[in-house]
Length: 151
Image (tube, rainbow, N blue to C red):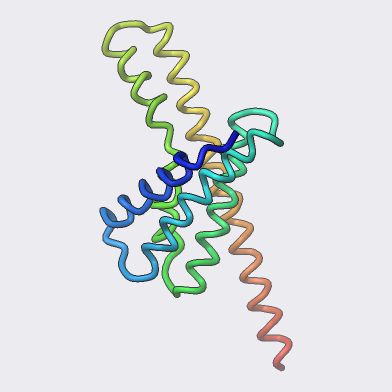
């Protein structure tokens, strides 16, 4: 079940980081909506995708495409939107427990949570890389087609 408070919290968290990153004007709203979108896709992915890492991967892909589109609309680098929009996906709880187990000397739990945390980070990074690369190819081809169509 998708919980409304989680979606609102994702929006508010991304909004807070947008303020922290000094994003201004309409861009702050786009960035906060991106964070909300990232979490909605993550939650919906639980219904259709086989595994949590796939949820993170697909959500990162979609929010990166969203950021690339917003970047074209606002004539701003995509990272302006992506840095705040990806915040709800950051594995804060897992990272906290990883570090807590390391400090407490519980190395079995540390290794377990550490590998889980790294897996989430890799899934998010891979999603960003895939989507960013595809977006660059798409927009380059579109620009090339547009320029050659005019000739």
